[in-house]
Length: 149
Image (cartoon, rainbow, N blue to C red; front, side, top):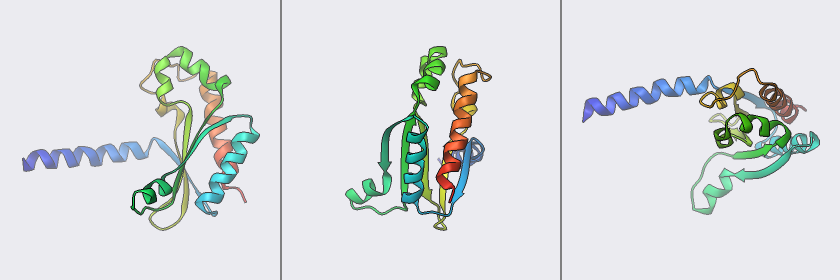
């Protein structure tokens, strides 16, 4: 039992390192709420649709648990996402897009999203497709707007 537990923990720790490389993280000098408000404004200002804003902290508090501030924004633009899902409908598992704004262990607000090429890596989607490049550019611009002063 003990060797199996060690092997599992080792595999998880290696996987965690690989996973960290698949994400873009940008610090924000603003609070989680203010950063998320700025992200929502940037997304709506770009003509994309906000599908949901999930307050993970409020969810935890609703069941008597505490956690650091964390909010998830789910949003998209059918003009960009649809061509990707036309290539492989399974891409709908990762679309619409998700950006997490959270306070790290030191209290610093962070904006986190998965890199687009990694997001669709397991699907039959051409990595060079124009829609993916536009999605990546949009994520970069929108998250930069969220952290801007």
